[in-house]
Length: 267
Image (cartoon, rainbow, N blue to C red; front, side, top):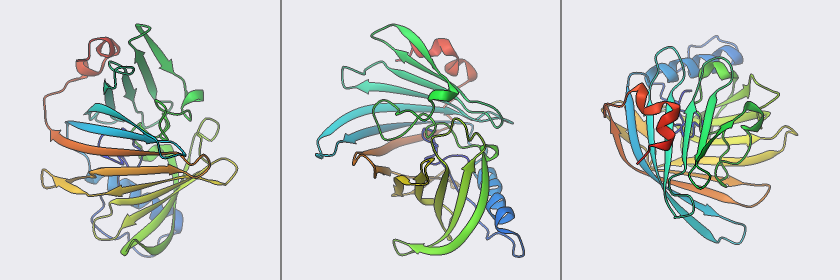
């Protein structure tokens, strides 16, 4: 369950399921859920590095919109979580803002936000990871790559969603104290096990938001990435839409492109 969007993750996301086989029978729900997560993560391994462009559309309760143009860079790190760099190009009030995330299989992720107006780097602590990312309905927690070891899994049921046969699995964060979620329910299509929908439940067990994925394309004959992601917050009525384009793989990025000093020199 490594990447929801293939970048981040950005958003990790949240969750990327690319398993090509049905889990073995005779497993407990917990074993079956964990098997899906592990095999899905392995299926997306090996991309090395990638870049993409994105338009972020924020909508308030009155459906008023604001648009942001963003670039995302991702570096795969063997034996650990991915590194990602998110750069805001427009509008003018956020241009030059950059977010750097080092995901880890075990322990807290490392995250920094560069604010050009203040010319300083702000570290995002684990206590703040449930906060809103740049005013969107995604949290800092969502946009780190979703490493298998971060969650406890359980297969729930088989169910059709939007006309597609899906597996539904549940994941609960290991870091219960700092996560903004009690649990998440994830719908994966049986044909390719791509994530179709994620429901996020807050720590009071209330449905907080729903994230859906659309327009999957296959790159390098292996890696599935969505063209569109849409999240709606059921508690405040706001939504955020992500429109992805220009995915590229094997661009030659290195660890130097993701050190803390890279935040101040992004172009």
